[in-house]
Length: 411
Image (cartoon, rainbow, N blue to C red; front, side):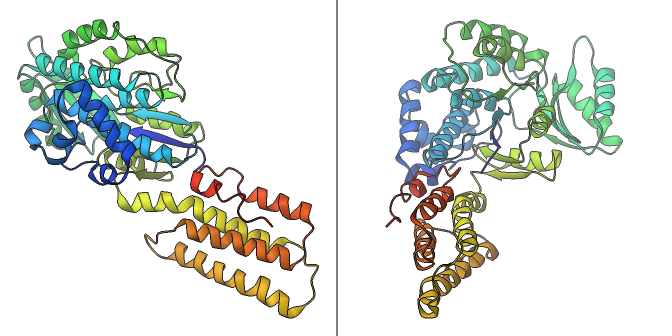
């Protein structure tokens, strides 16, 4: 999939059993959990697979759990030889996952950092903070009502600009609830989030200062893929910005809508959510309905993504079979070496495209490549042209299993 962006899940996306299938089927994913467990000093895989939801939802546990799940999913996804993404972005906590997968933060360091980040945020919450999702109302009304309900002893601010009409307000419990009731009275839908404090608000000032000091202990690497900052809705200019922007992210809003729009404005039309649940996938479609949006935690989406390069190879083989000039006028040979193989592969191609969740296999690629060679040989295409056409079939293909077939179908 050309020109895509990967999005990394934030806090609130966790559930018991997340990443179970990937860990059961891919050693690289299981090894990622083992790495994290060694850093944390406890079995985080067991917590994610079999743990109690209340324990998993503790901020100091949730953050390393989601980071580990996201990294395991990313490593598994890229191990299949996928096209290099154009951008990364992560929602709140997910920004650290994005920076980690972009190589800017070593995974072991990232595990330590998010564990401490979660601990600091939990301490700062101190039972007097809340976050409420607000939907179906324009942001200007929310900003105005937040200003009216903020007082010296109780603040409320917009903490997340998620989509066109989906926001989160955060701050002291009484002020947030007061603002939410006023918003509800003018038609907004509200939903109290299951978090332990008023995150992305001034309530996190102390936690932000301490996290900034913590970040000074770590060394950061070059960013291999552009990562969008929640704070600026622009790519990090360099890894030197990490120590400033990550603490700032804890006290000011997440500009998610702006971040996605920046990526779209730079030519990206496909987004893939990396991490548990399908929250960001849904947000992207609300921001821009015309783009493609997938989640690696959705089996249907995974099947689609796995099918995509296989279908591209088959389509190219079919197209090349038709367009090549014929130098063989023996009807029997032409029927056996061109018509019948072509019809068989074309039938399979249409079957895959028309059937929901129809899985492709590497055998489909082998049959398509075999068909192409049969057609080229039967048509008596000159060797230099035949080799060029065969090489062109693999242009832009990243899947290692497919690339390994490149030399197997030559005479």
